[in-house]
Image 1 (cartoon, rainbow over the protein chains, first blue to last red):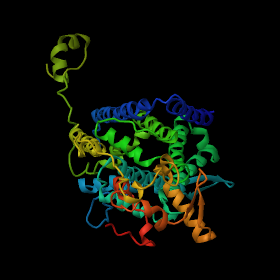
Image 2: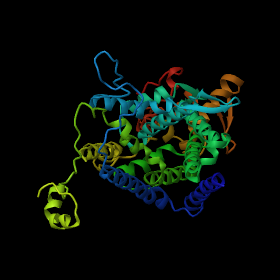
Image 3: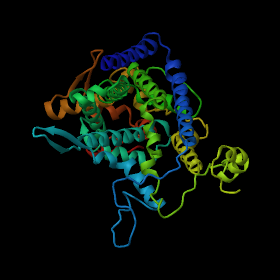
Length: 330
Length: 130
């Protein structure tokens, strides 16, 4: 159900771009207005989410992480798994963000006859996720060649590295193959594994299909149905310099690609995709475990109004005596 | 609450990085490339038309060159019949560069603009411009 809904949503979006930019010829709407609006939604939405998270109180350090805490000198501590310093915590977040360390520890649990519990080595999700995210980053950075003039040296360098192989006369980008492979794997995983399929929602399938659509239109444009790439860059530079201008003769495939990207980007802050920002705020990753070395006082403690027993006895002494209750002071 | 300023610093840093293409030129216009057609050979042409139409050539010249490469090097065929029935010799040096002898004014205009580095000149001899 969720799968079909997401799939047809993406098909519908493609039709919107095809009808709007292709048949109706609303190039200014699809080439200038929608991209600006989508980018503004992305930045404002992301800032809104992060500021909202930043306001939430996180008073406690979470010590139950996988690794020996720093204690006596003859007990070997694990400074990256269970850091006691800020530098260690930065390292732990960096490992999480760059190499998905928590996911590397993923195991699969199965109950066999006996009954016997078995934990399986399961690295495929980690590998698929890592390949997908790194490919996406490289592809995003490669696209800087459309938004900068002159093109920075690191973009050309990255392109040279990524385009090591050839497809005919032009570079065959490794990341193009990797991202399609990885997203397909991430999708198939949801379909094939019954437990994962059971918990998958439209919000899980939709970004996968959308990203697959973006990758597919990009690959088609690059290797099979060429669009006028100089005109594409003129459009992109017009957007980047706030002098919007729509050159003639860009194929409809480009507008579908751009519309998909706009949808993804504006959907970003309001969906699970915002884990891009959220991962930095994981309390089990970004707080050094020094709760036994330093005293943490809750920063928003306020003076609590108390009524001590002495005050209580002062107030009710007569009544207590009359009721025959014992009192401390006569 | 102590972390509020770190989180905001991170957020601001991210927004600055993401908008890098917007502030790097500070709103200055980026001139589009103008590939020059001012060569003697083109001036002498009666009908200023490339092997195929301009629209097609702008988007697909690399595919055409690849097809020519395969036809000549792998199939041994050297004659190209264009869409309008005209015949051309499939040769970068004898056909393309005959008219477009101004590499720095023509090819490099768009290639540099887009940061494209075609490997034509790893096999062919780069033309000397007079």
